[in-house]
Amino acid sequence: MTDLSRVHLIGIGGAGMSGVARILLARGMQVSGSDVKDSRIVLALRAMGARIAIGHDAANLELLGEPPTVVVTSFAAIPEDNPELAGARVAGLEVIRRSDLLAELMTDHRQLLLAGTHGKTSTTSMAVVALQSAGCDPSFAIGGQLNKAGTNAHHGTGDIFVAEADESDASLLRYEPTVAVVTNIEPDHLDFFGTPEAYFRVFDDFARRLTPDGTLVVCLDDEHAAALGERCAAAGIRVRGYGTAAAAAAHPGVECGAEITEIVTESFGSRATISVGGKTLNVNMHTPGVHMVLNTTAALLAGTLLGADADKLAVGLSGFTGVRRRFELKGEIPALPDGAHAGVRVYDDYAHHPTEVTAVLRATRAKLDSESGDGRIVVVFQPHLYSRTTEFAEEFATALSLADRVVVLDIFGAREKPVEGVDGRIIADMVRTERCVYVPEFNRVPAVVADLAGPGDIVLTMGAGSVTMLAEEILTELGQ
Image (cartoon, rainbow, N blue to C red; front, side):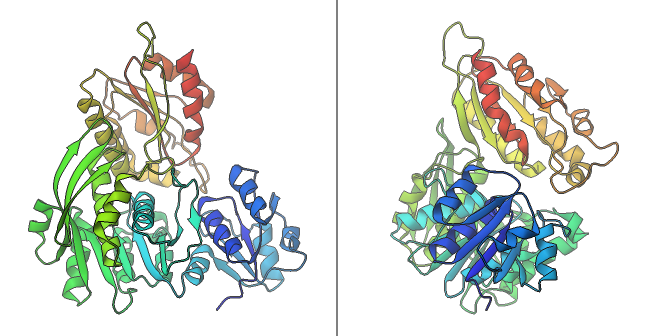
């Protein structure tokens, strides 16, 4: 066991790090950390008692007055030459990854872990809200902030711990789930895995991490998740599937635990009828799209496998108001009769993979169709990572062509250095839609969107990087 009495987290303001920091503080541990800038998250952690420095420096390891018992880093976000990481190694301090810390925090809990290429944060959030509605008080750590609770982590009084299981660096193999959900599997993070086969293999390895009485839950509407379920069932692992009736019939080798019998798109989102545990339940979802119906069904099935009441879980799921940056409504222009942008709504979404972009745009189109208006979809898309852009440029262009008008920004490199000849233009040049423009200058985007958008349109800022900051500026420009 790692000594968690004094924990220093490098990059403490990030979505993942801040969550485990909250839990540590709630459990009475001393916490210090650092980040590149102040933020609301950093201020909140300071208010809870964390000692946090802005900027990375080896001296930050003394923020608690004595060296930390452990230093926590992230494979993806923290470079090897970080001065605090280097200082910790010189001083002989124990250094672990966030996934190692999360595994320690989940010890002695029944673990509900949500994995998959897409939908982890949304499904994890749904599971938390559903279990809370059913009278449980689970601990949880998710990669986004619940709109209703306004937080990304909580130290609960119950024996259930709900968390995302991140596959991007194989860190999900640190956990021992009681219930493991796999929403879908599609090759990604090949900069780490090298080949699609290696990426697929990590989910098989994850399934073998289940406790002896554990259950693997797979989406039968996803080809690769269903195939994982069939392999595991044949190997003697307890597997339950979820999905549409057609998908359940197509995969008889996996016992179906939750079947979707009807999906109706409404102006507010979606309505679904789901059969689970001998009951037929109606659930309303405030975020549109078949992918969200599938995520909801996964959360419902997982909750019942942990012993929660299905009816109460369904009530919680119907009250789920979403996660920040997942089709999050940022504002709406008043529907004035003479307004050039009357009734335009601006949403922000984290989608940064072609499959995610496709799902969000199809859901948006269904929403507009259900409203019987003339609104169009205007997307402001920021590619994420040079490697992902190079790998999926054609797929991104095909996905974005589902919109009516598209603005492509330059690439948000995150941890990667720029690559000569690779920019947002390689996607924009392949988009086949009414109008697509490449706008590398951030400050020009609001005016460009104002020129493209008209009454009743939906504007979507989309991507995993800084594009989220444009939503408010776009609303201001549209309002003028």
